Length: 595
Image 1 (cartoon, rainbow, N blue to C red):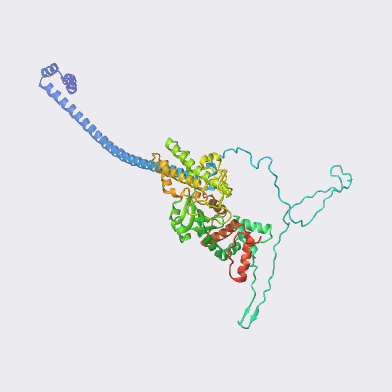
Image 2: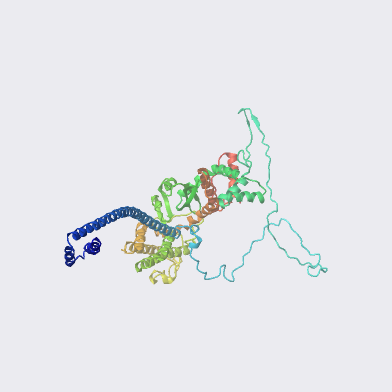
């Protein structure tokens, strides 16, 4: 009975648990009697308890899995936070990298602009950044058919050598002696040049009136010095006048002049020499500040690893160097202690505006170079029109000055100041009446402006430019400059240069008012060039005293060169006078010193 009931109840219980228990199955179970129903209910309760147990275990497992998932989610959240922070850091690094790249690009552009700036010396521009020089239109040298030139024969023949062959150099045969000769003069330095060592026996005698011993002065060397004036002046001229390095001077005198020197001994001797020649240095500065015109320029310098500036103030007769820590107004105030009663010729560096000068001339070459620089990057129609008009205006001014000088015999406008002391023109800005006016082609003036051939012999030549016509053309140039500077512009470069023209309009064509004033500052740049070469070879100075010595001796030797004086003989004669009298003679003018 139980077995039969079990077989009947089992499928019914499973159907009930599955949810497929039908009404027919329930009636059948009920028909089996109460015992069958009880068994079915007990079996169902047991199966439900087992399922509940399994569900509880599964819920516990799910709870554990949920806990693990929560922990994993927390870990993922932490990782996500770290990734977010790392992403933020990467973003910041990318931003800094972009800023650094932008800054680097700006520095590169600034370096390129600096290298190509009109005021940048050629030596500061890298070789790879310089444009190729256009091919020459004609071959270098003088034209075909020019008179020949060669070295002049020496005025004195020191010795004579006779050369004669004993036999024929081709066949070895005997030669028949002839009277034919030819002369060949060869100039050379002696094979062995030795220094002259002189022992000076200095007598010390007693003076009863002064009650002390006295002795004569040895004029050939400084006190307590073992090297004579010629060695000191020659070596200092090599270094400060020619730019030869100290080691090269030591080798030169050691190998070729048989004079053993040390770098330290040379430096000390030069410092003593500069202390004596400082009177000439001050005289050069005074003459520069009282001249009628003066060129000024500056370049970088180093003193004991620090940035300094080398200033140069020069004209045809003087060249004054000053090494100072400042590149601005304080340095200029150290030199110009009073108002400059002359024409100051400079570039457009703003510090020069602090100098109180009677008149100024700004370098037009820098302005023309600025036009060329902007032409390379600005192709707007307004800029091209502005540049064309400004370039034509400046060239018209240069052409007018050149024509004036050609007729007056004053030379070219861009070859630097004249060799004689300058003389300013009258305040009316007209050329001196004693000078002949410049010649222009007859087509350059209207027929009414040309003098008649029936005038007396004192009249100007037919092609001359009368002073009133010259002044009229100067006024026309100034009016064109004002119109060009005052016009409105949309282009940034045109506005910038127009602002510069408005600021300096009174000092653009000053060179037309003075015979000795040039339109450029090339003379100052040429005078500062030897210092730049010396800076490259010797790395500037290592002390303040060395910088002071540099300024004094460079100024002295450069001024002597401008005046056409022998550098070493002039200094030697001055040192002998100083040793004999205790005072340094005045700096000689051109043609005073012998040799």
